[in-house]
Image (cartoon, rainbow, N blue to C red; front, side, top):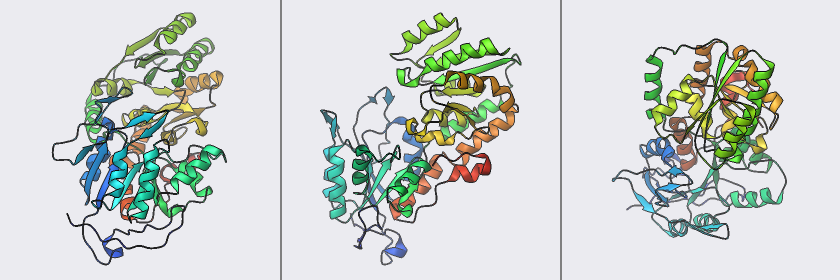
Length: 418
């Protein structure tokens, strides 16, 4: 295998210019395909869209990941036989993770670029990033980035960790703004957002749009929760909000929860106490069935925090309600544009969430327009094609774009998250 010749240049410790400018115009005219190692703890099935997309780009890709069948209830992705996937077991000792394949990839002359999971709890990732830099590789971190702007010890450690890479591939604009405030250069902070298996879901969406709308009572509001049932989901807040809304309005609320988990028995007991008729669907892995639940719901509510559930809901045209405390949120919460693709309430505030539920018929009075708003968020921003475009730029060392796509999409109607 012929390896791209790398040109060493000086760079700062906080994400300066890459030592390997991999574009043909920046590498002495070389047109060799960069050899890229993507090292992940494991590849979940929902990464199929972005991995398929980046696989079609002009790279030689090798994927390193733990070959587990399932991790924390999430099925792993099954790679095609012609994909260069190499098993990379993860070992955990006293909450510190080790994945020695990352170090071997950093030491190998086989690769020009290392794309590493941005988790500072992986001791071997620190080593791999440092070795990658010393051996002239371009080092990218793929992950959430900074979760808060606090000048805490935890964030100080994260700042040192991220400084080992040349650039970061991030899921949200807020993380970029925080990183800039911590001294990282904007051109090295790539906001690629997140996505699910877009093409497969798009086919399901089109099929659902062809079906006739189901009959319903005008006063009925259909609320859906989709996630593993744990205390972190805070569905107790949602249930109390529904109970309050029933007492203070003339609307009828139908609540459905998809998922199983350790909190289910407690939620069932609370439902009985509040005298709520809730449909506990349980675990459901049939994507088309889940899509139908989302499509026919008026709103998907995630009172604890919202991650890829937001992408799932918006893909099928249903707005999302979650809380507004961004330090406790996932980056996908940035997809919730109040009044367009959802609503936000103060974290833990039952009364405010109740008012959000009551206001649904007024805020989202035109269901067709609401669907279009939700579709746009996914079709234009949170999809594998957009992710691939940004990740490709990051791998090649192009300057990162601003990353404020949601503000551009919704203009003054979008509340900033920075």
